[in-house]
Image (cartoon, rainbow, N blue to C red; front, side, top):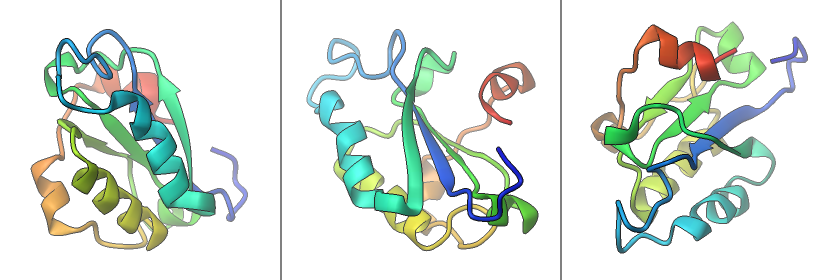
Length: 127
């Protein structure tokens, strides 16, 4: 991330070998997840797709990185797994519109999605 204090949150959505695969997780409109997040977030966060994040047992995986202001306030990236319904996307979007990590407390329901990953996996995505 740059040092610009206006740099927004960043959301990385895994779209590798398992995440986004309707054979692994049927009944989810995987193709609509990223456009839905972008529309819900507007300028509050940047959304990007990533190759496999190596947490396949938690598909679909979303990583929320704090804004520059959030990082300065102590916010750290938050890894979310099993993000397979629109309600979870809505909760993520509401949290980021409120400021995201370091600025706003996440909705309590996101505790159910929070996962811990190895340092090796974290290092591949986090700044």
